[in-house]
Length: 142
Image 1: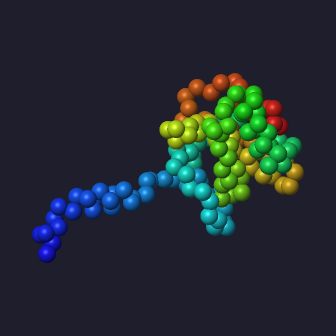
Image 2: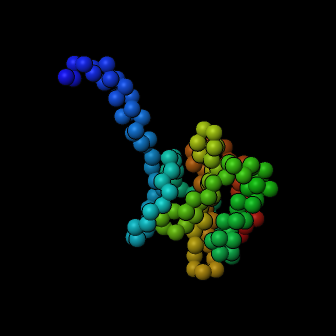
Image 3: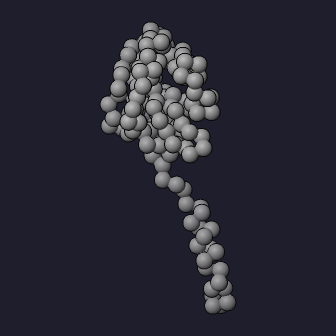
C-alpha cells in the first residue's frame, strides 16, 4: 500500500521541516521565580560586561520611557527599530532591532532598585564601534 504513495514522501518531509521551530535563545533568567516571557531570537550574550553603568534617580518605568524617547529624538532612530522587552528578573531592556533582518544592536538594560531608583546599563551586543551619543544617552536619563 505504501508503494502507491511513495511520491508523497518528499512533500511530507517538506511540510514537517517547515513545522520546526527556529532556534532561539531567551534572554538570561536570573530570577528564582519562574515567569513566562517573550522568547525572542537573540544574540544578547549573557557574559558580556556593560560598557557603562549609571544610577538613575528615576524609577524603572520613567527611565525606560526616557531612554526610548531619547533614542527617538536625540539619536533619531525610527520607532519601528526600537523594541522594549521585559526580562524574567523584572528588569527591562530597550533594544535596537532591525525589523527587516531581525538583527539586533545596542541595548540599554534598566534594573529596578527599590521603588524610586534604577540602574541603567549600556551593552554593545557585538557592535564594534560605539559612538559618544550612546554614552551620552544614559547621562540624559540619570
